[in-house]
Image: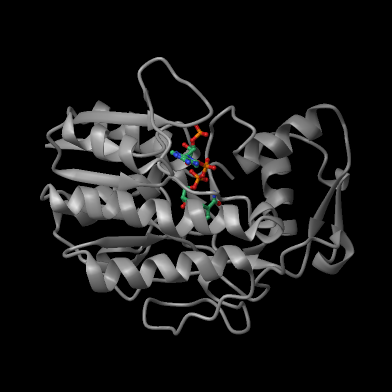
Length: 280
Ligand SMILES: NC(=O)c1ccc[n+]([C@@H]2O[C@H](COP(=O)([O-])OP(=O)(O)OC[C@H]3O[C@@H](n4cnc5c(N)ncnc54)[C@H](OP(=O)(O)O)[C@@H]3O)[C@@H](O)[C@H]2O)c1
């Protein structure tokens, strides 16, 4: 099969690119501001460029992990968020679907308010910040306008990547320098290993799954507990992790507190060891 990954320079896109390539699939990936040798530059906010890009390719599956994924940036720049998180993916999805390709879009657990998580696919969305509102809006568009679209919602993605976009890497880099880290005790979520996420996503595509699918790790924990586990797993001093509340950070965008995702579809429930190698 021929795949296009829009945003293969990102955390999820990078995992997808490596995994599908390793499996022998034919993969074309794009980047926007972070060039990589094997990737093609594409800015999805430029409509003509998107048309030209798809005209030059034959494609069966178009993966869209591309996003403005910084929640606070979205809150500060709602117009930029709308452009990147609603208008641009809408255009990409439409262009892909017109050429007969299957569309796979990555959304987020932040479509929920975090009042009573964890949430399954049937839970009504109720976003509490700009990022979640825009993701919710594009989800609705894809569900109603793009035949056979698959919308995957992950939560708190992590990996072994040596990349500042990866939470584990950021934590380890601080601990190496013996820097204390403030971690919140009041945000609960289901951290999702990037490795398991893309394997399950590919499985869902092969299974012909359509609609919304939650793909998340099997455990629900606080950011504080997650950070402590990373410290322990990598042999650093857990006492460097300081428990704080979300409120103490005074962030622009509110966060879901009692959050996390579960799936009602048994084949896509992730298990340690079977679907991913535990890091902590
Ligand atoms: N990370 C998480 O914990 C998490 C949790 C839940 C949901 N999600 C969702 O999962 C998806 C992937 O997240 P991620 O962590 O992989 O994000 P990421 O690392 O920030 O990657 C975003 C990707 O989008 C590309 N991009 C941004 N603007 C673009 C534009 N105008 N044109 C083309 N490409 C553009 C970036 O390219 P460059 O880097 O080259 O600029 C990058 O490849 C997102 O939809 C995010 O909302 C993430």
